Image (cartoon, rainbow over all chains, first blue to last red; front, side, top):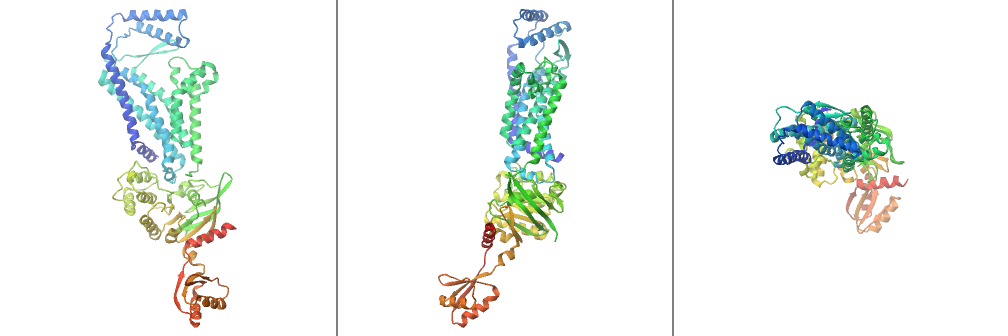
Length: 317
Length: 305
């Protein structure tokens, strides 16, 4: 099995396309770094002695909006969150006067996780379909190894690849952030708002959690791409559908969720588990357990489809 | 000799159509078995069923006694194969390709890879990317790939497709050598008859999914009566004479020759007869029926049934 993984790994990394992916990923995080650095010159941190007063003003403003009912219904939550966090800051004396640090940069580059996800999807979509396109599947399947094992090794390789990209992104962001912005002397905690209460979180823990949570939707979409790749043997189809769903899926689900309750059964209503830690779930009454069960169900369906079709397939052309 | 590959009543039905119909035959150790048939007869389908790329609808195939259906991994470990064109990972070097396939089977050492590369004569170019290989070199790499684990059966689907005469010859020599020196059973499919005649010990002819005939190449070609071409003067007299003494023969006359279908033992008799009647004989030539004639004969006969 290890040898199979090694094979797939080699086949991914010996291709130029893969190197291009990594370079693009690094370049885009450098770009974000450069832009942020450039902006930083303009606005140096306001050395504001009266930050508490500023926050209080903000709270009053928000509260007024809430009382007047002029707030857009979708941003009520956000407004409440801002009030709670501001109050917390004042109570616990956590100043807003902090320099932009490496950790903020890492937090900003979490946006790039979907970029890494895109590449992982491309790899997942190609890993089975390409063997068919290249014709190498014929030589691959006449080895004394069951098809299930071969498919399994391919799936695990995709996961490894995804993890590898995320790791590259994470480590590179920390290093780059450290070089450009430096690490703060005292780490500022991340303030998390959930169900009306604010809690402090260690910054690194917070970053790891946000990477982890982001990876769940990645995992699901990648698994889907892998399934499409193995069922239809067509990598473009797999890439197309997966990327479309990745960008549109949550939007469409969000729209549906405002009208229909059954929207909660849609995959994308459940992929974002952070809704249970921060803010409110997309459909009222959804719980974390419900989402995890739904995710497992989808995960199993994808895999069953992929494995059954791959195992039964007559390799004819 | 032991049967290495055994097909038992193998059938394949795709969308209600019988592609392969109750096919049975054995291939023995050390022999080159040719699998012959027109395009679309089911050669490739049969070969793909032997290596497990396509499932069987009915029947079973045994390789060294292991069922391909029930015990795929055990059965296929004795098989080395190239199915149609030897497609390799073009972005890898030839060597990396071999390492890749070597990792999928237990006990393929570096020394073994080097040995196989040497055998197919790719030592100089083995570290180049497959992209840069000619078709002949890819075919040789394909052969190397199939030999990595010392298989007992070697299966090649249209191995000479698209090769130039030198390449064809090379493959042929390799195959004969492997069968003779290593006792491998070799199964080759082709629609090129002249090819088969030179390569194989035994030929199975398949048509419309049915096995029409299995014969030794020697018998296959020589079994029938031979046709002799006699170069004579006074053709018409000779024709009458032969018709009188050896009735029932189908004689054909062309410009200066007479074609007579007789058995070899009858030739001296024929000569005596002609010489006795003062007919000059300038030459007697055997027109041997080629495999091609026989093939068309066999397939036509059975096809019409």
